[in-house]
Amino acid sequence: MSINSGPDDNKASTSDLSAEQANERKLGDGYNFEKNGKLALLFLCIGSFLLLTVLILFSGDKAAIAFADEQLMIIEDAKVNVQVLSIQSAYTKQRKVYGLIESAQQADLAFELSGVIEKTRAAEGERVKKGQILATLDKQRLFAQKKELDAVLIRAEADARLASLSAKRTAELVKKRLEPEQRLDEAKAGLDAANALVNEVLAKHESLEVELRKSSLVAPFDGQLVQQLLDSGTVVSSGQPVFSLMAELDLEARIGLPTQSPLALNVGASYGLSYEGETLPSILISIAKQRNRATRAVDAVFKIDSQAAQKHYLMPGDLVSLSVDVQIQKQGAWIPISALSNGVRGLWTLFVIDKSSGSQVIQPRSVYVEYMEQDRAFVSGAIVQGELLVTSGLHRLTPNQLVKNIHVLNTARN
Image 1 (spheres, rainbow, N blue to C red):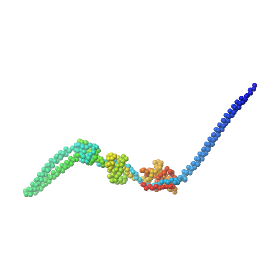
Image 2 (image 1 turned 90 degrees about the vertical axis):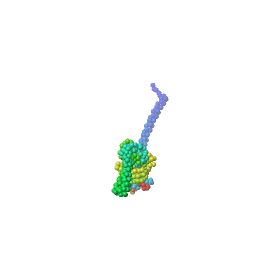
Image 3 (image 1 turned 120 degrees about the vertical axis):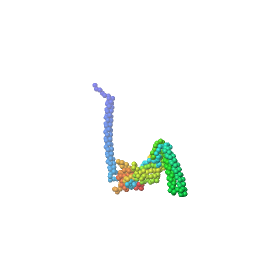
Image 4 (image 1 turned 30 degrees about the vertical axis):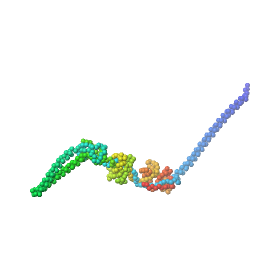
């Protein structure tokens, strides 16, 4: 029995075949697109590599030409400011030296006599006036001696009167030739001895009065009692300090000056001392003629202005300073700070104009900064007298550059 396929079956088989062919066609197109993309990416990479290689070759060639030793860069129109280096054997710098405020008058007060302190009439810290009694000694022994001398004086004066009367009577008798002249000479000698005894007693009396006055300790000048060393009832010996007195208004500053600095100062000239950022007017009143054995400095004494001392509440022991010039023996030159650029190993770099090759070429010099002040520095190192130093615009310069437009600055300042 045969089975015949109808029209519908043919249509189904034809549609299935067309779908399968379409799928195969799509797969083929996707494969071709992927293949073409890989080829394009490969050609792009190769082209980029070749282009980069060409750029590197050309740029390297230019760099080699630009920085070759025989080819120097030239600043065509830029003006370069320079100054002539002046080498010096020494330089002067300011040094701050310190000293202490002290009283112009200060004394340890003591009795000239020995004895017992009867009473102290002033206390430590008290302000006293000149001539004021500060303490007294026990005067009982002196008063007893005074009474004794008074009695001796009365007796001596009586003997002197008697001798005077005796001399007058003897003179009358001798005149009447009732007594020899020798008797008159003896009477006159007795009168002289009596008068001498009176004068001796009077002298002892004055000496005792002096001792009585010296039994009172008085202030020799106006000031403040900064220390009381002994109290009432203490037995003191001659010269043993009882009070320490210091004048308040007259203040001085004692400053030790370094070597050679005293030669630059003038006695009687005015100087400004520094105290806590303020300036104290002062006058140099003395410079020692020998060095301090402890500090090896020369002591200079400055009198502080009294109004300034009161204004700043200065007291003995306060610290003041003075700026003095000190000469340092070191060969070098003063240059502006703008001419310095960083170096290595603690050194600095300068740029100078080198004309040894016949052209004006920038060359570096390594130097050491010895001292700086304000806008300049003193340097030492590989520098030569008369070289042209570049003072500004260092950021535009490199070693071995050629320069044409040079402007020499006036450097009269030392």
